[in-house]
Amino acid sequence: MQTIIQETIQPAPSSQIMLDLVNLKKVYPTPNGEYVVLENLNLQIKKEEFITIIGHSGCGKTTMLSMMAGLNEISGGHISVLGKGITGPGPDRGVIFQQPSLMPWLTTIDNVMLGVKKVYPQATKKQREDICKYYLYKVGMESAFYKRASELSQGEQQRVGIARAFAIKPKVLLLDEPFGMLDSLTRGQLQDVLIDIWNKEKITAVMITHDVDEAIFLADRVVMMTSGPKAKIGDVLAIDFERPRTRKAILESENYYIYRKHLIDFLEH
Amino acid sequence: MKEAIIKVFKKIGLGFMEPLIRLLTNEEPKKNFKEVLKRIVAPIASIFIFIGLWQMGSNSLYEKEAAYKIETTKINQGEEAAQKLKVCMESGEPKCQPNTLPSPSQVFGAYKKLLADHKRIAADKKAFKEKTATLNESREAQGLKPIVYTGRPSFVDQILTSLKTVFAGFLLAMFIAVPIGIILGLNPTLRSSINWIIQIFKPVSPVVWLLLVFMIVKTMNKNSDSDSSFLISFISVGLCAMWATLVNTIMGVSTVDKDYINVAKVLKLGPVQKIFKVILPASLPLIFTGLRITLSVAWMVLIAIELLAQSPGLGSFVWEEFQNGAMDSNSKILVAMFVIGLIGFALDRIMLFIQKMISFDKGAM
Image 1 (cartoon, rainbow over the protein chains, first blue to last red):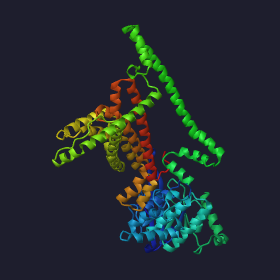
Image 2 (cartoon, chains in turn cyan, orange):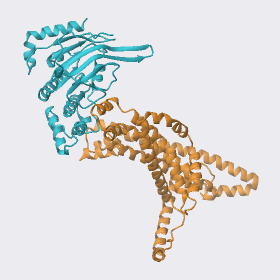
Image 3 (tube, rainbow over the protein chains, first blue to last red):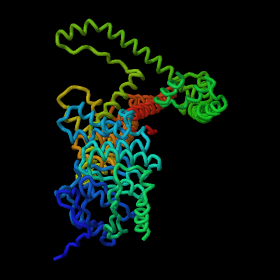
Image 4 (tube, rainbow over the protein chains, first blue to last red):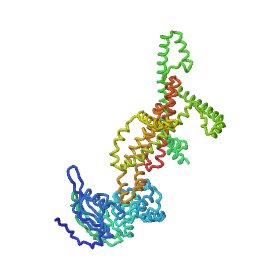
């Protein structure tokens, strides 16, 4: 019998675990045989925790996230949300993609409405609209309810993407480099928007990023992935800053530089 | 005001008028003058060059044909008859004109003649209607069929008949091809199992479609005394023209951006919402491209089909004039050619306008 490799960190009580990845494996068939992207990947994410994942390009971060979202088949092991194994996408897991992927033919509010209709089937039209407006207001898009998505800038589109994901009241929010294509000013604004709304909604978040500062600023724990093939979790770093955080306070703290060095050391090896 | 006019012009595909409007209102005269030269004057000049070349070509063809005609008359009927023919030709008498490519002025003359002819027939029709109005009323009261005008249709009537046929054929094509295209686009198994039908029937020529439709409609329509030629021609037009829409719809639906599909999956949209809110709008640009091709193909094959099906319309007009064989008829055929071309162009513009109105893809050309 194969023995399961125990994680060195103390396992949390099971009621506290929101997302559990056990011995996760992903294999892509290629003409030259199988290509193993992920293997023996174990990760437990606690309720209301904010996790950021960093690692080199092509190491399988996005594959892992889309498996959690249920968009990509699991080749081995399993993923469970609150102890229940997942079989496909579901409204308990909201996703914010790298591309905002708004429907350009719909208005801002209709884009958010898409998922809301499904999640609140018995609500009246007015109530649903209020829900959409509430979240659009939260991300600072209150002046553009009836604008077409194609008329918005990238940053604005991603704001709507955030509102759309939160509006379906997910238990877990999965973010795949959501601010990757934005300039650094807009990125900062959107990080604040995200953290603000995350604080209020008290949900679990898993976010992939390339940006070390972003990873530290947002996360409770930063998960570092080893380079592929057969990528797995290389190291986990707990970030011990008080919330709510401000950039200024973090930049002035000594720990920040220690964390930063730790992450960069990992990435450069 | 000015900007509004420009916007309207752009919407209806007359965007090239923009610099002229700006020039007339004295806005950046230098730049707009250049633009006017480039976008308005140059195209108009090309029209004149085209007409000039045509005039030269038809002149030389005319002379060749005339010389040949006089020569053969001389050989067959002697010098005197040839002299007579020459005088007759120079006097412009239609019956002794050599039969060749007509010149632009002759075509314009034929156009005016056709219009006058239309006015005469329209007046005739109106008079007939007034004359039979009371009679028809009493016939209707007795349960008899009213007496209808059976005179020769005018050129404009023929155009309207053709437009009606092409419109009916286009609607038929749309109502067959778009739903089937969506179903096939959504379902890869069905798509691959039915693909052979599309691949085999797509290249079939309009004539064969006509014959096939004829075989079926002739039998099905046996007991009714209605005229089946309209039925035959519009069904054939629809069947010929629908393939572009079918293929484009399948393609559009099956290649919707994966990001949109993922969003639909993550939001757990139901099938109806997924189709109407995501897949259809996303594939609308391609569906419209297909519909535009369908409309232009429908208009193109219509002429050939009308010609063969003996159904009234521009096609039979062209065919009758060709059978007629006089120089006058040649000019009328060319008038028909320009009318066909212009209407085809207009139809495409209308489709483009509709596409721009309802599709998210504002950059369509």
